Length: 304
Image 1 (cartoon, helix red, strand yellow):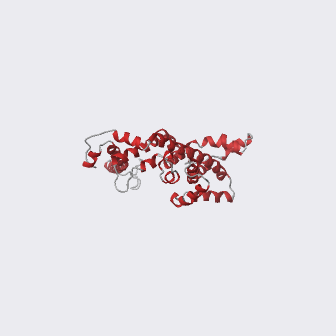
Image 2: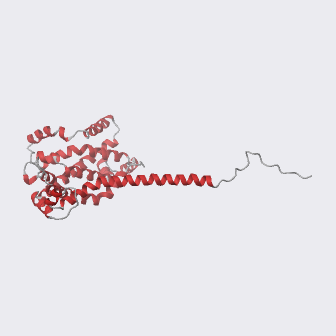
Image 3: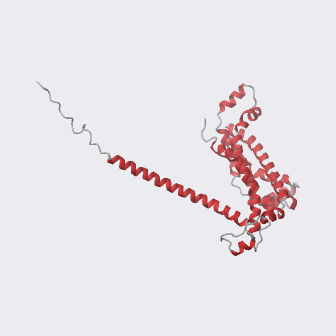
């Protein structure tokens, strides 16, 4: 007796192989990804042009003669010269004003990082109610613009005999950017595991020794980011040195560059070279610190 093999049910039968259907879906998905990638590249190039074109225009105009700019401000340059930079260098007393700006920026960065890191450590570790309110007060200070407090600060500096003094300007910058430093450091310290400090405490380290030997070295990435941010703000600031430093020998680069702006006429071949000379040191500093800035921005993003 021979047994016949019954065919499988219709539901169990394998569907006929269609080689074109998955190829079509894969091809359409690849085309879609290419289209999205091309659009993203185009938008990225457009954004780069938006940021780069003003800088290129400033640089090219700084190298042109006044007659060439007057003939065609947005036209193709015909002659180039370095005389504009030499004239701006001498007129703004670049060497002296750059040293003044460097001194103010360096002292401000030092005081902000030291005081900010010391204040942030207890705010990040103490869990009592008063620490939360103090931290909120510091965060509230980041929303106060300098224009609102210029008049009270002027009266305070006058009563303290700190007008036309580097120390007064450094105190003002410290008060302005200390809330930002507390925000940076507190957020970063909270991402550091407590196990490290507990191990230091078992070795006999007190609070200050734990901070300086354990926590402070770990703050290096975020300190680089903070220093870059503060340096950009202090170096490019115009309001504080213009109001609180009246001595021409103590003026900063930006204040001297601002002196080229006339209410009625502006000479681009004089103003643009002065502005480029003013930002040149910041450009050099950022080139050397860009790796640390990126590391500081990504550090602490994921808690251990």
